[in-house]
Amino acid sequence: VPVVVVRRAFNTDRPLPAAFTRAMVPVGRSRGSRAAQEIAFNLSANLGTEIQLAHVVSSEPTSALTRLMPFRDTVAEDVSAEVGTRLLWQAVDQARELGVEAHPNTLSSGGTTASELMGFVEDNDVDLVVMGAVLRRLDDRPSLGPTVERFLDDCPVTVAVVVVPVEI
Image (cartoon, rainbow, N blue to C red; front, side, top):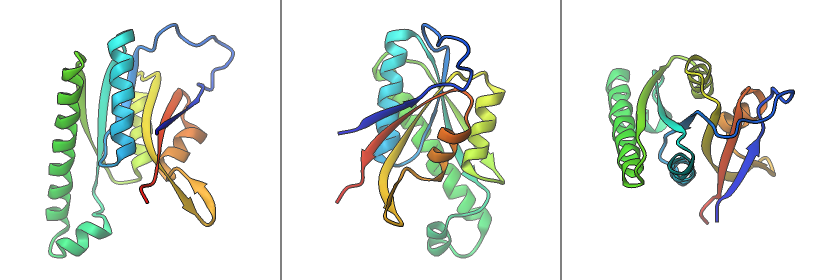
């Protein structure tokens, strides 16, 4: 059963909006990401919140991609972009099933996923981030992953994290 954790925007001197205008939803392969999409799409269907989907394609291939395709970084990057595009359009289709228009965005990263997504939030007047996380244990403590933890620490807008437990 997913759990939703909400961290209010940093500008606490003002009341929260009656309805969020624009939400960014990072899109990935995890169960947490899919659960976050479902929450965001239902929010949009009920409040009219604009949905911006974002997938970050790293210019640094992951170790898994490197092991599968050790020959060229550009090939691994192309595969990553192809997978990201497929994930984005699957999310767009899921949104349409709920009567929601979602806008897909592919971001290229020379840095971290968190920094690319944070830049998107700042550049696009996003007032809500809905992201997924899979709860894991790291060094004997719970962990939501570096991207989610960075957003909870540093993102100036309201952040909703849909947390699913790791499958055993």
